[in-house]
Image (cartoon, rainbow, N blue to C red):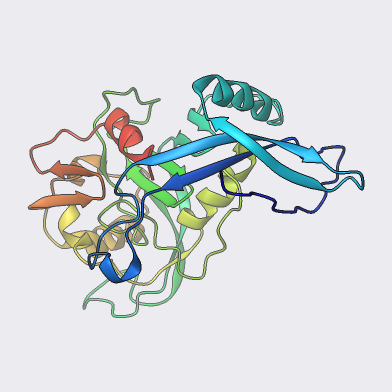
Length: 278
């Protein structure tokens, strides 16, 4: 067996290095590797190793054994004990180390508009302004790779079967992802980070619709004129009926690892399932 005599720095905080997991995968020589081939292709193997200490207390990886499900269960349980328990608010749908999903009810909020190329004849949004506007209920799905933002058809806690709509927020791409720009990103997926995620959506300046976003609403005028109308007449309720079902904006809604077509009924449950690998 290969000599794994790798040395490590000692850890603090009352923890000692006791085991190591080594991951192996097949890999063709660099000059034979096909262009564009993924490193995920081919078989893989993992082994669990004890860590031995020499007379000076320096750790060395010893010979190992194939990694088993029993090993994984054992270490998953131990690692789970380091997560502090927390009481979840009623609006939380999923709380997981790799995903946080929640909803917010419909409400009137201050909105920040600074349109870079405002259409002609706007009544309220032709200049940089902060104005109260009504927002529909929203679903948020935060993962390690980003934040998904979607509208809901009713201002009530959604179920797995609740259909999802496009969010009318201008900083949201048509695939549901927030356009972060220079907005600071929360560093954790915890209940405590929810205000920061919501602030990134509702408290940032809207400068223009993202490509294709004007097509996510029904009726005349498009998305910008819809917001202008709501702001000008100080509306208190968003016309949810004008929002199209998510994924219906013509053609195919692309997502890595899953295909959502215009004929699919995109629900809270299906979005959470698709986001689990993000």
